[in-house]
Length: 188
Image 1: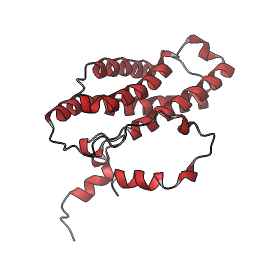
Image 2: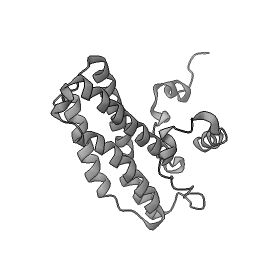
Image 3: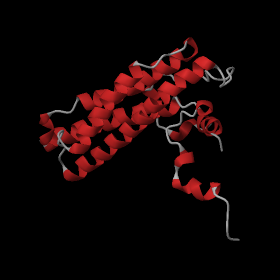
Image 4: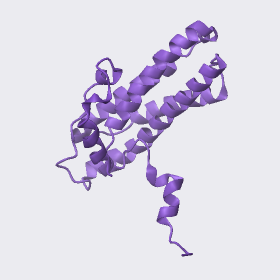
């Protein structure tokens, strides 16, 4: 099933989320901005070549932060000088610089602005890291808030997916389960 078909299916079932779900608070994603465009447009190709590493890295940052927050919940502590935390902070800074360097054609400006919003939510989480997190009462409250923001950023990243351009939150073509399917069978 293609991503577009999955999205159509998901849109046809509005009862998946309750009225109070924070996913309803998401900014509107760009409509199918690629519907009338071919993927052979030079401006679009140039845009995606620069954007794809940022898009992929943003997905990894969200995943890394979510994993760190799970560990923080179980350990009841979060140290901002942990190696894994400092690495994700560096990745966030690098992603911001790389995203700001992307040349954006007119046809992709809405898409780019939406991705900047998703990145902004993620970066705001990392800017909230401070020494007060050693108190468990503050930590749990903060982790709840950060987790909500990451959930929204992840949903926005998914909504900004452009299958035609290879912008997918998870590239299943690189997953191990695909290795077997794509290799010729030597033994019957």
